Every structure is written in structure tokens, then in C-alpha cells.
View 1 (tube, rainbow, N blue to C red):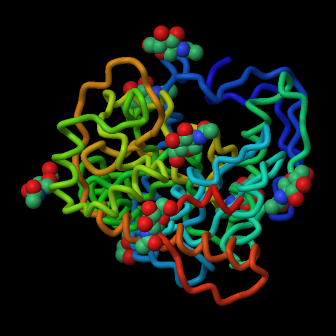
View 2: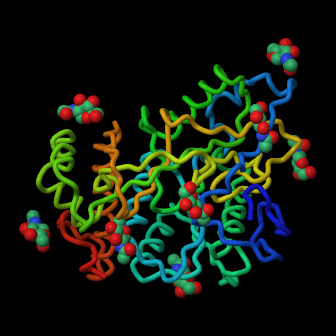
Length: 360
Ligand SMILES: *[C@@H]1O[C@H](CO)[C@@H](O)[C@H](O)[C@H]1NC(C)=O
Ligand SMILES: *[C@@H]1O[C@H](CO)[C@@H](O)[C@H](O)[C@H]1NC(C)=O
Ligand SMILES: *[C@@H]1O[C@H](CO)[C@@H](O)[C@H](O)[C@H]1NC(C)=O
Ligand SMILES: *[C@@H]1O[C@H](CO)[C@@H](O)[C@H](O)[C@H]1NC(C)=O
Ligand SMILES: *[C@@H]1O[C@H](CO)[C@@H](O)[C@H](O)[C@H]1NC(C)=O
Ligand SMILES: *[C@@H]1O[C@H](CO)[C@@H](O)[C@H](O)[C@H]1NC(C)=O
Ligand SMILES: *[C@@H]1O[C@H](CO)[C@@H](O)[C@H](O)[C@H]1NC(C)=O
Ligand SMILES: *[C@@H]1O[C@H](CO)[C@@H](O)[C@H](O)[C@H]1NC(C)=O
């Protein structure tokens, strides 16, 4: 199986109302794949006539569209119930600029179900039912079909569509939002590579690792706390709720694209979006697929890693804001659960270090 080709995979309806895509041939699972050696991102060349950058193209101006950033999480399956990782991801992505989220619900556990229903009520999340396709006949629980459904649904609605998992964080290295990150990329590409019209932005991947026994590494943890002036109470919050971004103190080397990379799409230009990178663009649009320089942004994939993970992570400007945002999101969900439990709306007392798990 090589990337860049959807073998006999028929995307049945490619309109905004698309509900289902069917893969007719046996297709290997590419979810955990590295990307095949020698495979490259498709070259979408920029034709001469398209080289004229227009103002509306160069600026990230959402005048017509409903939103700028939408996140597609793909399919939740096997009674996925890690509400904490979902909540952390939503809070982070909101801070970065995400305005709406799509999830495809094949099967979720009670905690994630409660969280999704809460966010549905707030208008933050669209939950779509996803039937249990035979897993040996489609990519990882047919993730590709789901993300393409999501990308097509967002044509003309969202300027950018971010395709990621809940344990992956698109990190702006020098900025505090995805919009600033993309502006920097567009500027750099225009200046250095004469790229005038980018159709997609692919970020390179790096695993982050957290402690062997769920405890943060020392002395890095102390250094981290001092640098961000983390209070004792905040530390308890971070540890109790497994705040991934802060507990992942080490980082593995960046992989070369396309291995495990993740992509921000312009939905109008994507013919077949991939889990990692664009598989096909509309050929009538002269657009470039850009690989983002890792000095501007990359994907932090937070997962437990037993192997050596020697590179210490950097501290980013948005970390403090993220901690504030995250606590608001945890508080909010806790209040929601309390109100459900007690059957009344105005529950005031929230103990921020209290584990949400005890409510469920
Ligand atoms: C992924 O890459 C590693 C290191 O290059 C290699 O050992 C492994 O076999 C690859 N896995 C797949 C599924 O290609
Ligand atoms: C893409 O373009 C680069 C540079 O122009 C070239 O080296 C490479 O072979 C091209 N790749 C494909 C798949 O056409
Ligand atoms: C680029 O834009 C300028 C000014 O809008 C115009 O005069 C020129 O013809 C355009 N060039 C191309 C190749 O479209
Ligand atoms: C859920 O996610 C957290 C990180 O938020 C992680 O520490 C924990 O191990 C996960 N739990 C399960 C059961 O996978
Ligand atoms: C998710 O799907 C399951 C199984 O179909 C269903 O019972 C549950 O209500 C759904 N949850 C949400 C939030 O849509
Ligand atoms: C915190 O870390 C950043 C980045 O490593 C560094 O620039 C800054 O000086 C540090 N601040 C403190 C108070 O240690
Ligand atoms: C590009 O081609 C697709 C499929 O043929 C079509 O739906 C779309 O409208 C075309 N776009 C433009 C700008 O011509
Ligand atoms: C919050 O809950 C924790 C654990 O139950 C408890 O140790 C702590 O004293 C509580 N804090 C407040 C302010 O009630």
C-alpha cells in the first residue's frame, strides 16, 4: 500500500451533503503507518497564470465563510471513553483558533458521550453516526472516508480544516495561534519558494513522551514549574487530570514528511484528503501543497513511550494561556455534570483539583 493512491476507493458523493464513502477494495490500514519510503507529497505545481497572489488569497480573511478553522477528529470507536484527552484536545484547539469540531461516533463510552452531548448543546461539536464498516476492508475503521466527508462538508463554510487525532497537538513554535502560524508560513513560502497559492499545509511529526510511571521527569519538571510559575494547586490539577502537553517533557526527533505528518486543508482544493497529507487535489486549481518548516510549527503527538526520548521540550508562549483555558474547560464540564447529578442549574462550588471521574 502506497500513500497518495486511493486504490479502487470510490468516493461516492462529493457534495456537501455527502454522508457516506465506500471503499470497494481491500485496503490496508494506514493509521499507524509511517508512509512508504520514497513516497513524496504530491507535487501540485504553481502555474504561471496562478502566480499572481490576490489580496483575498494572501490574507486569512474569513469575510464570506462562517469560520476560519474547523477540526475533523475522525471516528471514535471501541467505546472510546477518554474524556480527559478529548477535553484537553478541544481546549487546546479552541485556544489555537478552532471554532467547530466534527466527530464520527461509531461507539463511545459514557464519559465521552456526556462530554459530546454537552458540546453539542453548546453548538461546538457536530456528532455524526458512523456505521461499523468491516475493519479489514477499509482504512483504520474507514477513517479516510470520514475525514473526506468532513472536509467536503466544510467547503465554502470553513476556510481551513484541520485533520488530527485527539492526542496530536499542532504547535506554533513562535506564535500563539494557528492563524498566526499560517500567516508566517504563507509569507515564508511566498518569499522563499515563490508559492503563491497554498492548498494545504502539512506539519511534521514528533512523539512527545511522558514519564515511565505517570510521574513527570525530574529535574525537568521542577524547571518547567519554575519557568511557568506553576502553583502547587495548578500542579495538582495537571497531575490529577493527566494534562498531556505539560507532562510530556521529552520529545523524539522530528520525522520527515510524509511519515505521520498532519495537514491543514483548504477544503475547496482538496479532492481526496488523507489522514496524513493530501492524496489528490483538484487538478483545475493551481495550488501548492506546503510542508511547514518546523521552526514555525509541527505536530506534537503525546503518547506514552518506553524507548529513550532524550530531547527536552521547549516552553512555548501559549502554555500559560493554555493552562487557564484548560481549567475553564474542566470546570465547565464539572459544573455540567454536577447540574445533571443534582438536577439543578446553579451549582456554584467547584473544586478545581477534584477529579471529574468521581462524578461519573
Ligand atoms: C516505520 O519506520 C520504522 C523506522 O524507519 C521501521 O522500522 C518500521 O518498520 C516502519 N513501519 C512501517 C509500518 O512501515
Ligand atoms: C516534485 O518536485 C521536486 C522539485 O521540483 C522534484 O525533485 C520531485 O521529483 C517531484 N516529485 C514528484 C513526485 O513529481
Ligand atoms: C497580476 O496582477 C497585476 C495587477 O493586478 C496584473 O496587471 C497582471 O496582469 C497580473 N498578472 C497575471 C499573470 O495574471
Ligand atoms: C486518557 O488520556 C490521558 C491523557 O489525557 C492518559 O494519561 C490516560 O492514560 C488515558 N487513559 C486511558 C485509559 O487510555
Ligand atoms: C454515539 O453512538 C452510540 C452508538 O450508536 C449512541 O448510543 C450514542 O448515543 C451516541 N452518542 C452521541 C453523543 O451521539
Ligand atoms: C522560560 O523558558 C523560556 C524558553 O525556554 C525562556 O526563554 C525563559 O527565559 C524562561 N523563563 C524563566 C523565568 O525561566
Ligand atoms: C474543478 O473540477 C471539479 C470537478 O470537475 C469541478 O467540480 C469544479 O467546479 C472545478 N473548479 C473550477 C474552479 O473549475
Ligand atoms: C478539593 O478536593 C481535594 C480532593 O478531594 C481536597 O484535598 C481539597 O482540600 C479540596 N479543596 C477545596 C478548596 O475544597
